[in-house]
Length: 273
Ligand SMILES: NC(=O)C1=CN([C@@H]2O[C@H](COP(=O)(O)OP(=O)(O)OC[C@H]3O[C@@H](n4cnc5c(N)ncnc54)[C@H](O)[C@@H]3O)[C@@H](O)[C@H]2O)C=CC1
Ligand SMILES: O=C(O)C1=N[C@H](C(=O)O)C[C@H](O)C1
Image (cartoon, rainbow, N blue to C red; front, side, top):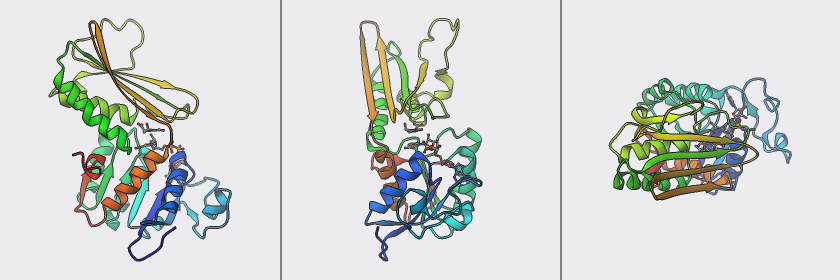
């Protein structure tokens, strides 16, 4: 853990979560950042405990708190992989504190995103449904392939995740679908077809379809299928380790330091914009 003058102080929201724990490990291993605060939701077992002890190790001196403001005022960057409701509440506070807010939370509604847009007038927000280099590159490739092919190629996005995931389609699947629509000069909302069940009728030409599989401990798998008569192109990303997401999030937190307020994506952070 680094704590030098140039090291960036990070608050991790949702410390006990799958991503929360991975983020804490990533920050601890970094020589460019250090952990200053962590939160959990009110009523969670970890609240009031020492973080190190709650994680089953030695005392770390960092208490788990349930007041987000208490954490945010200590931090230069806040990393947030929690729930839509919590993330929107946190954004109002990071905007006031002018802290960089890195948001990995998925399942945000259009209304939630409008609030984040407003908060981004005051602070730097970096938000992406997937923080990995591989997926962001796949987003770029998906747009290029979609632009090169006409609607004789049906586009389907298929994703698989662990049994605990609460939102569908995944944030990544939506990023890929948006990229495919963009490649065709369309808005995803005009061509999105998800949740097929029953007598759906034949597939509509030009639609972009979504299917979600949930089970076991799958970290995250995404296929973008371009299916025509006689041939198919499949672009695929397989995540096998959540560290790809936490490393991306930390990179975004560092990238955001001194950055103008705005609502940025990982494309900017990774130089793919
Ligand atoms: N953008 C990306 O690269 C990735 C995004 N995600 C997204 O991150 C989110 C979290 O995923 P997981 O870690 O798997 O879920 P999880 O359920 O394991 O963790 C969420 C944590 O947030 C905590 N939490 C909820 N409300 C809170 C509040 N008000 N204050 C503080 N903590 C609060 C929960 O108690 C829980 O510990 C999901 O939306 C998921 O889709 C997950 C992986 C990668
Ligand atoms: O919930 C998850 O686990 C993941 N969520 C993100 C998503 O919704 O795409 C990113 C990754 O696939 C893991």
